[in-house]
Amino acid sequence: MTTDNRQMWKELGIDLESHDALLSGLGAVYQEIYLSQKNRPKGMEFFDFVVGDIHGIRVRELRQHAKNGGKVVATYCVFVPDEVVLAADAIPVGLCAGAQFSVPVGEEVLPRNTCALIKSSFGFKLGRICPYVQTSHLIVGETTCDGKKKMFEILAEYHPVYVMEVPNKKNRAGLDLWRSEVVDFKQVIEKLTGNRITADKLASATKLVNARRRALQRLYETRKAISVPISGKDALLVSQVSFYDDVSRCAQQVNALCDELEKRVANGEGVFPAGVPRILISGSPMAIPNWKLPHIIESAGAAVVCEESCIGTRAFTNLVPETDGTVEAQMKAIADRYMQIHCACFTPNDERLDDIVRLAREYRVDGVVHYNLQFCHTYANEAVKVEKRLEKEGIPLLRIETDYGDDTGQLRTRIDAFLEMIRG
Ligand code: BJ8
Image (tube, rainbow, N blue to C red; front, side):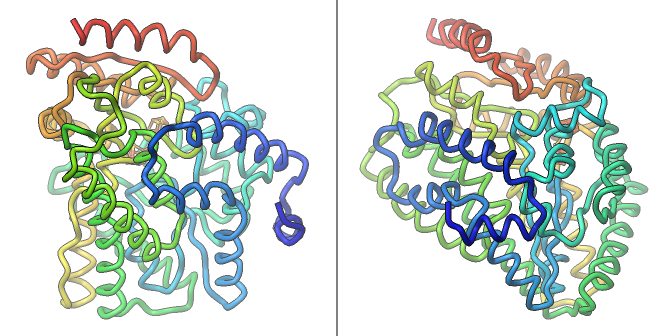
């Protein structure tokens, strides 16, 4: 940790003592979970570097952007369209909310029976522990689940917040509402930045974000191979980093990693012993540094080959059509692409069940682990339907409900039993 970083954090109003504790804990966990893996792709070095300097270089880049008059827009959900932010020369940053460290801080204000993701994100702001939040000019929330939607009202007492209304139904009225929300969001961003969003700017931003989506699609494609060329933990990390790294650099680095992975696939070179059970994780997002479940699954001798999650397939499935049409036509295309994200906040949401079955087949999985953050009622209730559907399809399922606390022993026992059942 450099003196320069400390000075920067101080200027951002970071609580240095808490922040030191967060980073030193993170370093030890990363060593144990990530750096101890064998035969990692060389392309992961970039992502190790990014995490190793998680609150350094990238924050410095954002600060420089702000010093040059640019704006930083922080988000918590894959519904917030990055294209609109980028088209106004602002930088979107997906905030992490996966650390137990900030949960007790969040609980000082929020009810304890709130999901860990919400408490963690709120705690980062309240405790002044996250330099990304501190660097941002605006946090964009959404009305996806009740917990988040009400948390944003409280968060607005501490930071500028704008909330987008995400409809509950995917019908015509829902789509119309969402299209108008995206147009309103454009106006908010134009006002924030003082920049007009033109058709050319939107078209370039769309190409940029699509390039990142394509790179992530390519990464996930390699995981369908019989010999899986990358661990689930590493693939998850790449997805996590893609939320806050520079969009173009991230796409380049993911593509460089894919060049290597595709060679591995061609040579039949995998990171797991032949015949290990293949697992699809489905459910709530795993924000950085939430690596608990994939670590337990892979330590138990299975391979996580896909995540049906917003830090996974939901983030990159479906591109925005690239056209040089009018601003209105492009905005409509952007809005329509985002309405294809099958979050459990929608009712009904049968498309998500179809996705899980499709992904299970495409990635040739032996079982699905449904991951549910405790107190997340939308995913918990939807898990009932997931269970029925997978039973009908003959796909084994294990439902896990957990938070960011240390229940590793208990989870390990359940995962071991599930894998034992799969192995027959
Ligand atoms: S589009 S999944 S990123 S809302 S886990 S905070 S739902 S109580 S995160 Fe999500 Fe957007 Fe949907 Fe994806 Fe609420 Fe549940 Fe907590 Fe959640």
